[in-house]
Figure: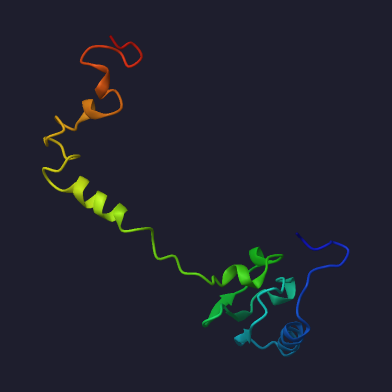
Length: 130
């Protein structure tokens, strides 16, 4: 559920104090933060925040397009390793020369005629089978 508009965006006080201090002194340095829940405000644009993802700090350069989003959106906590290895095995077999899906293999050509209409018969249209 989103936050009420009358309450305004949520930003941790300690983070906002650091950003305001850097804006006052016109300083640009990387600020480490654990506050993934804080909303990005226009005052943060141009700064680099190192957002903690549970394992390490991910540097995030704040741009105008990020205003209104949460800091945690730009520091992923999970790394996608891929799906099961069965997909890779099937792809290897299908791409191997002389395999079941290869052209000129045991499937009968595998060219243009081996698509969705291959089971309909030689001269019959796809909808009218004998």
